[in-house]
Length: 305
Image 1 (cartoon, rainbow, N blue to C red):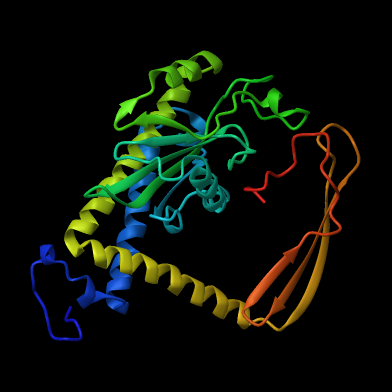
Image 2: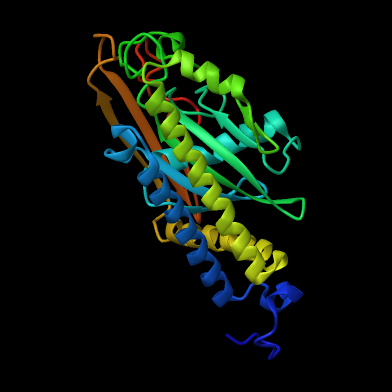
């Protein structure tokens, strides 16, 4: 690879951020390196998980975010988890703001605090380079049990969040590398299969550590400025691709209606209506006309929506 100004084969440690800034080749290298890192996280989680729901059903996901919490890579696993990560990161920032230090690890499963349903636990590790936060590694997994009314926690005929089990708002599971043993004890006492639940949680932690290692290796190789510029350009590039795809559709709107078979507790069908409006390179999904919340446990949290 040769930069536009002819500089080549220079030591990476000298910080060639300006040389490589916004180079298409560098962006492609960065994109593939980040994707490979997210997939390596996913493989590590798979190989170290304990429960059948994670190890055999592959009900988990891994991703990497930049310093602002914007996703820059995702493992090839469950898209539904990944769609909730941006909203979860927003609520993490709302809760902890700048109270993030090297060695901290955050945990959350609260559907009303950025999560999805209670069995899905988010684990987030901020990544620092010389005391500067540059990224986050994120793992999400559906756990076999989080307590509650029935084994498995989530059931369609639950009628309140407390039936589902233990709600975890955003908390620090590790503070500067030191585990909060009280939180681990609380989890262990509130789940039916603590060996598997904590085993899967440790698998998520392993995945986050691998994500951190990959980001630090990438930064050491290319320099911090190249890393930051590359990830920013990657997000811009993604937006250009998506907007280009939307712009290829004709302007106008289309409406579709479908129904769930029941409200989860033996009640009537539930109407889902959406109108998609395309205007140039933007798209709006309007769910006006859908039924309101229902008594059963089939309502979507905001992050899942």
